[in-house]
Length: 586
Image 1 (tube, rainbow, N blue to C red):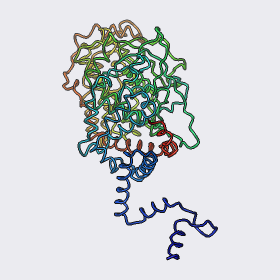
Image 2 (cartoon, one colour):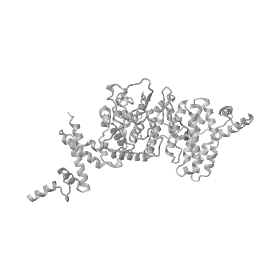
Image 3 (spheres, rainbow, N blue to C red):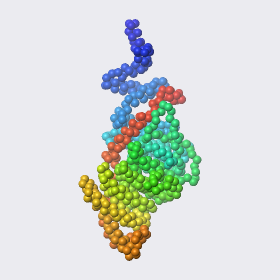
């Protein structure tokens, strides 16, 4: 009997020596016994252990609670998978919703400052749990959030009274986070992508049309201070795409108001942010962020309330988009200080033009171009239907689209090896058909219509080039023929005005006509021009996440989940920290 006691004691407390294993505490040996069984019993033991931990959380004894937290943390870490839809723990929170608890965290200024970022990211991930396979309660709950405390809050609550500072929720916290992501200094290195927050913003815009009203709520414009967080030695380095906003921003401190400041809103901040992210799409994270920005803008462009706000001539803003500096674009580095105050739709169109003219390169981002052109089309459809005569710099858009067509044709061999360039070319040609057919209903002046025809006449070589390409492309012949067919009115305009321009030059003995002289010929020869009516130009396919975007979001969520797991600091849940927190609880 004594011999058995000695052996048992030796098993629990091994003496240290050069030839023996390190000493293990009793509790460690107990855990070893739990996990040193077959897979089936191990799963049973883990679940049983977790069950007892949950029960212990209700204990009054604080040591038991802290130990339960610690063990639960380790159990959850064992359950983590790359694919969140395979994480069995999430099945529990699908049945026992924590949605209201997350909103409660976000509605309190103190808890929001400490846990707001994690809460929003968690909610974005929960929304994406098996979202295409079964009914996800978080999708339903997020789609119907419309309570006043959550919605009726300004973008930056530092402008509200102290008693209102405790009000807020998912929407207000998300808007503050998006505000804090914007870097004001264009000269800084643009490492600002944050896929997790962009995903949360997308889900809010996509699922809940009440959030559109939040986008439009205005506040005095300020430059958001970006406060760098100094990591502790034990904190892992945060990779691109997972950096949370600073706690100072989350706590929303009051800032002095300047009556001379311009007004801003979340949509303006988002457009500025997108103008930074979309400059460089070579990196995978930035490419994903740029795609997500364009998907968000697609959802906005389809929403009637958003379109009404974007086009409201009584709501004008100055939006200083970040523009790519390039010698080939002949741009000065200085920021333009004389930005006109215009409806926000002009800034959206400017952003699309900026992307179009700056990404004609070897690694052609076809997907982003398709999205950009479709956004322009959706906005034009709204203007046509509502007969909104927008005072926009239309010639910049037309010039960008013409240069895009030229680029596609000049690089047809290289691009056709990877992309169906005729699909994009057809979308661009139909944008011109929109202007030709319906421009008199939404272009601001008759002079704008004249300038449209002037630009079309100038691109007289393009139809010939497209026809040449279409006859030399075997597998793309059908796609190319659709573009050729769509050019019927463009060709009619060119064939109608070119002889008259040449005749005018000959009669007046002018070798090269000025722009004004060409416009004079155009204005005096409309009555004899015959165009063909084209159907369906003002129709578009509405955005649908499933099935076209499902693969993108699946990989995006996987990437976010991996980054969050890589950078979660388990030390923040250590026993000494938890004990310190519990010591303040009465």
